[in-house]
Each structure stands twice: as C-alpha cells, then as structure tokens.
Amino acid sequence: MAADSSVAQLAGERVDHRFKGLPPDADGLTVGELAAERRSLFTGGFTTPVLALSAEAVEHNLALMEQYADRHALAFAPHGKTSMSPQLFERQLEHGAWGITAAVPHQVRVYRAYGIRRIFLANELVDAAALRWLAGELDTDPGFRFVSYVDSVRGVELMDAALTACGARRPVDVVVELGAGPGARTGARTEADCAAVADAVARTGTLRLVGVAGYEGEVPRADPARVTAWLRELTALAAAFDREGRFADADEIVLSAGGSAWFDAVAEVFAEAGELSRPVLKLLRSGAYVSHDDGHYRHLTPFNRVPDEGALRPAFLLWAQVVSRPEPGQAFLNAGKRDAAYDIDLPFPRVVRSARDGSERAAAGLSVTGLSDQHTWLAVEEGSGDGSGPRLEVGDWVGFGLSHPCTSFDKWQLIPLTREDGTVTDFVRTFF
Image (tube, rainbow, N blue to C red; front, side, top):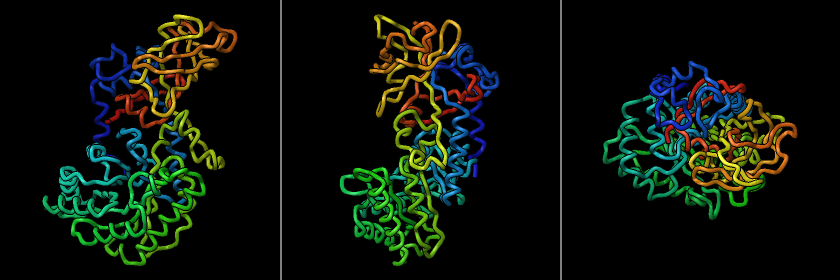
C-alpha cells in the first residue's frame, strides 16, 4: 500500500528563502531540479547550519524494521509524528507498513493530503470540527480505514454528538485505550473503567469497537518485568472483551502497542496471545526507528537487548561552522536551539571537517556545554583531533549527532538526503 502521486509533486516546489541551509544560488529551482544536480553538501553552496539525513542509514533502518515486523508476525503502523514527512511515509509503506499512526487531527489531515489510506490515531479525538472533517473523509472514501483511541464515557458522548450532528454515514472505528498505570498518561485505568467505555461505545450508532490499545512507554518505572506485565494486562483485556461479545461488529480485532523503546516486549507478549473469535491485527507503532539517533534511542533501543536481530543506524548529522574561538578551550558554532534538538540531550560532536582542505577527523576532545538560540557552546580540549592536524579553527565544520528524532525533524522543513560521500540525492519535506 503506497501513498498517491501527490508525494511526487513535492519535487515541484520552488527552492527559496523559506528553507534553511539550501544554496542561495538555487533560488527558483524546483526541489527536483536541485536534487538532480547532485551537489555536494560541503562544496555545493549549502550554508551552515544544515541538517543532513543519511540515505544509507534511512534505507537500512526501513529494511530492518520491515524484517523485524515480518519475523514476529506484526503489522506495522509507524508513528508519523516523528518525521511528518510524506516521502518517508511512502518509503515506510513500500517497506510493508500497514498504515501510519498519528497523534492529533492536523497530522491526520496531512496524511490524507498525501494519500494515506490507513491511519491509527493513538490519542483521544473529541474535537467536533475535526470529527466533522473526519466524517466527510470516511463518507467520501470507502477505502479509507481510520481507528482512534477512546478512554472515557464523556469522550464517547462527545464523539457521538459531533458525528450525529453532522450526519456521519460510516461509523468511526475505536479501540479502548488501557492506561499504563497510576500517574501515567491517558487511558482508562482499570478493567472496569475500560468496560464502561466499551459499554458507552455500544450505545452509539456512530462508533464501532474494534479492539484495545495502549502505550507501554508510559508504564511507571518501566523495566522489562513491569512492561511485560502491563502488556499481558492489555492482551487479557482483549480476550475478556472478545468473550463478552464486544467485538461482534468488527471484521478483525485490533491489538496495538509499541513505541520505540519496548517493541521487543510487545513482540514477545503479542506472540503469546491466544486465538480470538476473529482475526487479530497485532499492530506495532514504533516511529523513531526511521532516523534513529545518537542519544536517547541509541541507549533505549530494544536492539541493545536483542543484538542478534540487528541494529539501527543514526541517520542525522547537523553540520555547523566554527564562527568564533574567543579564548583557549572555547569555540562557538552557528547552530543553536532553533536548529538542534535539545529537549532530552545536547548534540554530540561526531566529526570535524577542515575548512583548509576538506579532510575529516573524529571530533575527539570536543563537547557541547550549552545552546543559545543560534550558537553552540563547544568546549575544546587542547590537542583535540587526531594529533597530526591543526586544532579546531574558525571556519571548520563540525557534524553533530542528535538526540530525539521527533524534535530534530520538527526544526527543518526541507532536509538534504545525503550519501556517505556528501552527495545530496534528494530532499525530505516535513509538515509540522
């Protein structure tokens, strides 16, 4: 299942001042024309700071998660909030994704604008205006599949009222969200609460209960034992609802969980789930894998626990330039909070590219101590580098690894997709 031709039309957008880091002399070219020139990120006129996405790493990560889902008999709806990039959605669908997960109505609208036919909304939806729009999408496109969380009787009542008022002709599929425990995020907290929500759905004519879902990443003090225990609660809830006949109107039963930190536990527990009265769509929703990172998910990825299943590769490098060396041990670069994710970890210096000759060396002895809006504060140990070249100089480029992919994508509207040799082969458009 792939997105429609509107994704290809992104190549027709004109390059101009809206897009950070792109060559000034490319103004007026289309994105497709600029990509076809195969410019070098380093010598082709790109300005710093500029965020680059590794073409090789992205392709590796897409293939790895496709293989992982296939191996564990999981359907896959990666969370699109990570990248908000229709081009990456298209690649994820080409690599076997069932659909794309969203968190808010705006994201659903972007997905629909680019032809996504299956959307899982991992959040509650009680906005009347959004529900009116959704009803129109469902009514005019019989092939559109949409599933949303519900976690309260009041929320069900609001959904029903909005859908009834606009004359919705197709019921909206919903799954009861099981909360991850006291103090966690959304989700009905007990089995009784979940049953009350399911009863409320059954009283409507506008909603159809098709399964249960939740997010194990919110389990308090998460560790393998606690996460596994909660996932078993989720599968037990699905089995209980099925015995009670609550999925009588469903063609298949949706069982969904899985962020980017515990999908190994999801795979293990979902494999244990017994047969139900209808086919079960075991839906994994991990999203950060597409770019991975050099911080948060490098430490949390389940592939650290199951190394025989492979390893993701960090795909981001934020290139910034040294603009000041005002005192020994201190350098300032021209990237800051407007350019780099910093909500979890500060950027990680990975490589230095000499402004004198283009040679590259590992960023040994460099560390980021802080970010201003447009400056990186870089501590420089004397003698940093490989020991043979000059110390860090004004004009040098430094490539930084980033932590937390969602925030990294969020700061850039058009991201060069770059080969290992620096050749820019395409541009990834984002819509936040």
